[in-house]
Image (cartoon, one colour):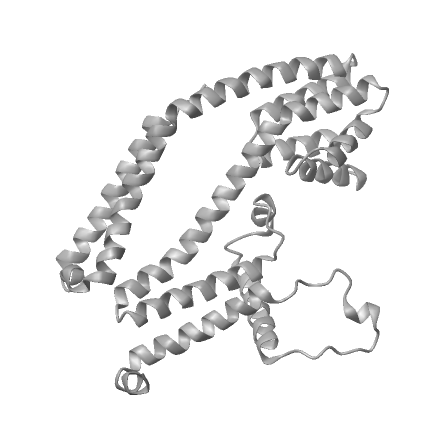
Length: 317
């Protein structure tokens, strides 16, 4: 094995980069999370000993934080919070960089520069996709829990509680992400923000038209008065019917969406398989300008087809 590595410096570099990346990822995954109270406050004058890996990771995240402060963050804290990730933006960007290094190392292990570039590009793209999927999932869960949240609010109002108390009850008893968003609303109102503005921001964050109706109903009730519990019951009934229709639409369009995903993923999966099993088969695409042009044309046509399929199965009501 040592003879093979000495004869192939590219392979040796790939092995070293892969080992380094695996070590960093292992440390990030297995190391304990940060304590809530810094040790400097619990033990004044104590200087904790850090390993070389910890110092390197801390220095890297600090450098990334400074670069993000000068050039802007590719992923903001609000986006991570909306996706339900309790991590700092610089740590998330650091993980993406480490993942790209791992991708380059894997590509070099297979002696394929094209595979290394593709894997390095797939990591940030995949992170974006994962964030988008998590945000969509949380917004969908918020919409599904909205009916129960309204019933809980109406019950508290009938029991004689005030509107802030009803919101606090939802924050304490509802499931996530509804509880998280209502906790945010309560905290914002406690620091002086208007309740209507806090509700509007939440409706915009969760992209919920139904919650916008609730916000408008609460705003109108605060101006003209009336029985807010009955108004919330009416809104809850409308939201319940819309959820039933939304479920029927999702069922009818599920087959078309699955077909679109398979057709979009099939070319990339086939190309990755050929790069691993028979790299010479795809070598002509990287040896001439015509090959690169054909790859670009294929990607453009694939994007057009994906958008076409998305519009075909997308139903608005």
